[in-house]
Structures are given as C-alpha cells and as structure tokens.
Image 1 (tube, helix red, strand yellow):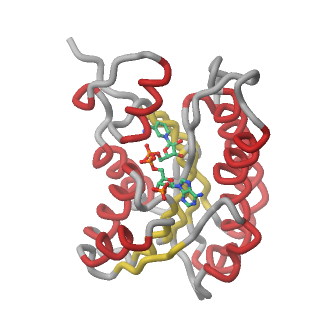
Image 2 (tube, rainbow, N blue to C red):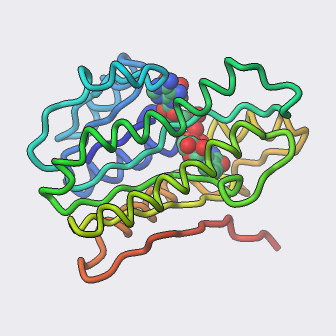
Image 3 (cartoon, rainbow, N blue to C red):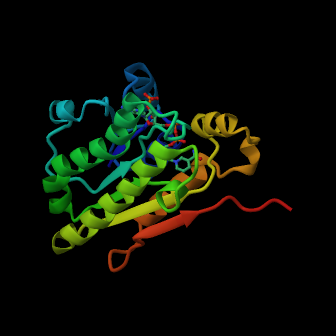
Length: 225
Ligand SMILES: NC(=O)c1ccc[n+]([C@@H]2O[C@H](COP(=O)([O-])OP(=O)(O)OC[C@H]3O[C@@H](n4cnc5c(N)ncnc54)[C@H](OP(=O)(O)O)[C@@H]3O)[C@@H](O)[C@H]2O)c1
C-alpha cells in the first residue's frame, strides 16, 4: 500500500493501521527524519520521500512496483483564504499538491494497480461537495479531486479498479486546529473524529470482500449530548 501524507495526522494513522494488518506500507511524505522514525515502528514499512509541489519530479521518486493493492491519497494543504486573499502562489500550491500530484502519482502507478485490481482511496473533504466561503482554493481543489476520482472510477472499471472518495468531518489533527483558528471557531480534539477511527474506516473499505465496494463514504463525528 502506498500512502501519501503519511507524516500527517490522518496519513500516519492509516499507515499504522495498515502495518498492523500486515500490509507492506510505503509511507510517503516530505519529512525524511519523521518518515524514518515512523517506519522504524512499523514492521514491513519503508519511507518514500516525495514533495508533491513538484509533480514533474515524482517519477524519479516513486518505486518501480509490479503490483500495488492500494493507493491512499492523504496529503493535502488547506489554507483558509477568500478569493480576494488568495495569491497566485497559494492557488498553484493548493491545486498542485491536492490535485495534480494525486493525478500524477495515480497515473504512474496505474500499471501496478491494474495488475493487482487494486483500490485507490482519495481523502476528500466537505468543501469537495459544497463551496465554503473563505476556503476558495481548498474547495476548488477538493471539488477537482472528486471529479478526478469519478473519472478514474469510470475509466478503470474495465481493469477492475475500485475508487473510493472519503469525506471526513472534523478530524483531530494539527491541520484542523489551524483551520478552526483561522475561521475563529473552537477546536476540541475530543469532539472530533479521531485519526485512528478514520484509519479504521479506510482499512474496512480495503478489506471488504471483492464483490462490492463503497465509491463514496461520508464520516461524521458523533454529536455530543
Ligand atoms: N483533519 C480534518 O479535519 C480533515 C477533514 C477532511 C479532510 N481532511 C483531509 O485529510 C487529508 C489529511 O489531512 P490531515 O488533517 O491529516 O492534515 P496534516 O496533519 O496537515 O497532514 C497533511 C499531510 O500532507 C502532507 N503534505 C502537505 N504538503 C505536501 C507536499 N508539498 N509534499 C508532500 N506532502 C505534503 C503533509 O506533509 P508535511 O508534514 O511534510 O507538510 C502531511 O503529511 C488532507 O487532504 C485534508 O484535506 C482533513
């Protein structure tokens, strides 16, 4: 299984859960020291240094794989800014990391995914379904990511690939803490989805019997009484 954003809150939890289930994991991210430390604690895992701001350089960084059972796209950036506040550089980074790199990694790994009749999982977000004021570039990127997943699902059906988009609600990570602060909203980690819970959803999807799968899944935090 290859997981992008494996140094992040959700990606690290998915990598841990996958290693616990004896998947051979390639944990991809930018921080090589962090990746090495994580992989030392996950038997059967290897680090995959990747900077998604430069999709043109990804081919040299990706391993040559014969088969790939699962590709889980967790990497993402989520700057809070309106159209008025979003400079060209932020548009480029958001669309490049959140969409273009995901498409490029998927494209390069398609032969291995096809051989395994594998599963591609995209971690999307509610702004991929409904625009959110002051989150313009992020919403645009997640909407594009949803359409990328839908195109891929239709195109790759003849090869037996499964493609799932997950829309998580607030999940207790550094990213959510930062986003809530920028929106001036409270953040209580205990009231959010825990990354390990979201990871268990991903692993449940991947472990389903192969006669059916879930193309889209929304995950919400349980309301507190
Ligand atoms: N947390 C939530 O409430 C929530 C809800 C819905 C959807 N999501 C989505 O879930 C995904 C993971 O979010 P998270 O909460 O786990 O955030 P996070 O902790 O900030 O993790 C984001 C990951 O993306 C990686 N990344 C960012 N820019 C990169 C780049 N240029 N090259 C390579 N990797 C890069 C980060 O690596 P570095 O550490 O090197 O930056 C990190 O591993 C995102 O796509 C986010 O949109 C999150």
